[in-house]
Amino acid sequence: MSITEIMNHSVISVRPDRTLRQVKEILRIKRISGLPVVDSSRKLIGIVSIEDIIKALEGGYIDDTVENRMTKDVVSIESTATLKEVIEFFEKWSYGRFPVVDGEKRLVGIVTKNDVMMALLAKLGLVYLHDERRREVLDSPEYFARSLLTGERLDKSGADFYFSIDYFDINLAGVGASKLRQFLLSKGVDEKTARRVSIATYEAETNVVIHSGSTGAIYCFIKPESIFVRVEDTGKGIEDVELAMREGYSTAPDYVRELGFGAGMGLANMKRCSDNMIVMSKVGAGVVVEMEFLRGREAKG
Amino acid sequence: MKISEIAQRLGLEICCGNCEQEVFHGCSGDLLSEVMSHAKPSSIWVTVQSHVNIVAVAAISGIRAIVLCNDHKYPQETIVKAEHEGICLLKTNKSAFEIAGLLYSIGIKP
Ligand SMILES: Nc1ncnc2c1ncn2[C@@H]1O[C@H](COP(=O)(O)OP(=O)(O)OP(=O)(O)O)[C@@H](O)[C@H]1O
Ligand SMILES: [Mg+2]
Image (cartoon, rainbow over all chains, first blue to last red; front, side, top):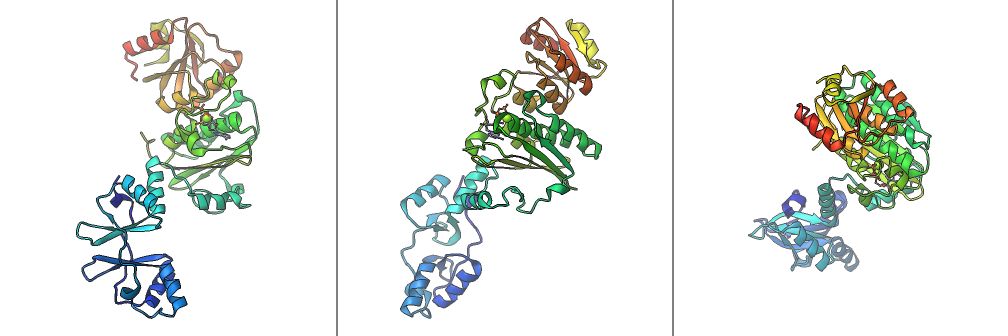
């Protein structure tokens, strides 16, 4: 993966003849914390950060020009760099962002640690909330009330389909998913979509029965363009979601393995069958899986 | 191909279900999630799993018939549920390998 795939192309820059006061306004309005400085041919000649602004306010020179106060020996990355090289850059220097330049030192983009992380997650094919947002969601009393995928409040009582996973008998595994399949077909959802939804829901349901040690629920909302399914439980949770997502990883006990469970393919199946998926878990509080299925589409791969 | 024709040509014992349905594809495996991820709709599944969960797997993934190999027996529960779901249950003393080969040779596609 090259840096041009992960960097932000629409980088905001400033000319050297502007004042620091103007920079302060740009940073405030755009909610960013630094600006590359370029000359009339877009060549990178410096950088000003929020730290420089604070110093300028303290030192009383906020109306000075950028040129007089910017950092001139700015560390930049060439646009031919690879993702690996970008990561090494972040390791070597403690800066939060690097301007990206072409062969003639012209500014073409900017890359932050967040861009790198998002690129990695996209590569993993996982819609995965980054740490801050994740903590925010998990710590909120609304953990069970908001959609992970859309961030909207979920009116669960308004779900088109509801099934309570309140059994512990492994022989019943999949009753909820089977009912959901019937329900979708009765609502005129096409056969292929209904199949994808019910396979993914089956996997999520059996996980609740086998692994959570608790009860759970299935909610389904039928939308004009898509089917939205949420399966949640209040059980023991998953310590490392990324590890659990890995195909072949399973902690299934022997007695269920004898029955053919425990291939470690459940979560992988859910991801393959759905178009969007988020798994969120807090140890001791349970697991929430949300999946979106666009209607009238084949399963991936 | 009709399930009844397959049963007759391969000498399979019919335990329950509607054998006049057609199947076009075959799959084999004993790990449920793996079967779920590979099975195509309208297929016949070759396995040694006999407990009741196989019926839900079949119904959800569009499998219409199950061939239980190595002379394993279906528990009564499985038969009751399969009847309810309309899944055809077959059994044989042949191995899964042999059945898969025979199905392939009579034109059932992967
Ligand atoms: N609802 C849950 N509560 C607690 N742990 C879970 C839950 N869902 C999944 N896990 C953990 O994630 C692991 C991987 O789940 P996955 O569904 O991919 O495989 P599996 O259930 O072990 O096997 P298979 O689904 O192939 O039968 C499980 O073994 C378990 O450790
Ligand atoms: Mg599973």
